Amino acid sequence: MSEFYEDKDIIIQLAQVIKGAEEPILALPLIKQAPPELLDVADFLYMSAMIYDDAGYGFREVADMHFKKAISLGPEHLAYRLAYADFLFRSERYKEGFTLYHTSLSFEGVPVPEWDEKEMPDADIVVYIDDRKYGGYGDIIQFSRFLPILAEKCRKVTLLTKCELVPLFRKSFKTIDVQQNGSSICAHYAVSLFKLFSILWNPPIETVPTAPYLFFELGRDSSGSGPLKVGVVWTGQSYIASNGVYNPDKRHMTIFDMVPLLGVEGAKFISLQKGDGGVDGRVLKALSINTEMISACEDFFDTAMVIQELDLIITIDSAVAHLAGAIGKPVWILLPFACCWRWLQERSDSPWYPSARLYRQKYPWGWREVIQSVKEDLESFILTSK
Image (cartoon, rainbow, N blue to C red; front, side):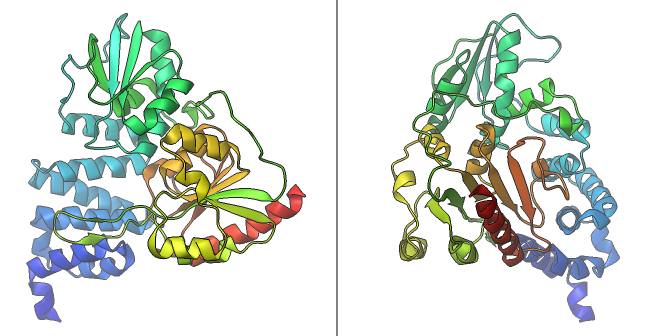
């Protein structure tokens, strides 16, 4: 065994595999017993810092030290800096995180000068999505709450965003010119949506502009009549990392993890999961889960209209979670052991979305206990709703 721990490359590769499998507890003995000379190897420090971070509160101090040393040894590695910024956000050290994040990513992609933040200009500003980080649908929905604030202070605000979000934002933000990515623009300054968040918000977290903030003319609202109508989302896409390691997204579960919940009496379940083919589709059909409503949706406005017809949303950390919270629909969000910084730590509520309730894994991949807790709460919710 001692010979194994003398092979530094094997240790780093194995740590990468275990980290990719989202098993930080299993990786701790490996990195703790690694040869001391690995503490001078940037890749090892970076990997060990992320493992310590994922392992929880008791390892935050050593994670902080390892991140800092990894960056000092490998300042050219963008991944080190962005991962440390996420660590700082998770530690609620927001100002430090914003500074590191914005000094790490150069301004690019928009042919107008970057807004320098010195003062709120009486000018036209274009807000764009930086796909290098925080460019997912959920990120955009979450941080879009700052757009109306900017629109009150500037002459004109244009948002460049993904086509699937354009109808939703056009109907919600009447004072903002919402355009699809790639559209021609005319503006004096540009700022990314995430940087706009860092400019317009001052910590603590309780001071973020609260939801609901997406408003539009509602269609038919049939929530509250008949059986409790519950929308569900359980999975998304996994990916192959650049090092060839398969990374199952820790936010996601399988349809079989959720099956015990889908049998609760007194509830009618509606899938809000796009692309329910294969095994998942056959399971949904066997359980008589409605898939037609989401299949007819072409964009997020369509999805919002479906959500409006439901009584409750139960979802993993997903764009649907943000959408439901942003329109004020009750939403129960199921979180992995090492969740994103935006959900904070050990809380069952969210300052971002007052209508949200958070359910957390007690250990990696521990969905069984989460689903059991949600099942019991749903049964109680149905009883009190009658």
